[in-house]
Length: 105
Image 1 (tube, helix red, strand yellow):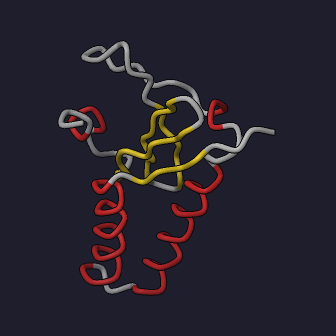
Image 2 (cartoon, one colour):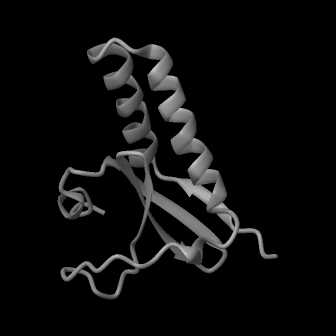
Image 3 (cartoon, helix red, strand yellow):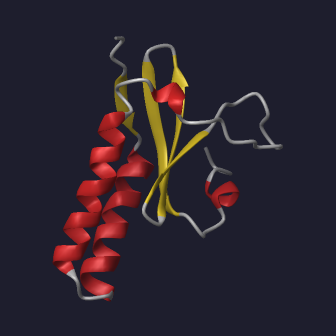
């Protein structure tokens, strides 16, 4: 089976840090924050094997880019596949406006 390289963008890393900080500090649940962070990180790691299993999102503003969205609890991992590399672009709270978060990519 082909192994894909998985790269986390600076923005995706910041998103994960922000999620951790919000749950740990604003909500006051550091243990829950670490557990959520780990679930997201574990899901990202699975993208090294058969990332095509995740369906392509429709983005009418950029129909040539095949964004994919992996759901983890209430969060979305947004990524693209290029050759044998998975580029994780954003990690976002799922009910938020995902399209708006992709505007600056």
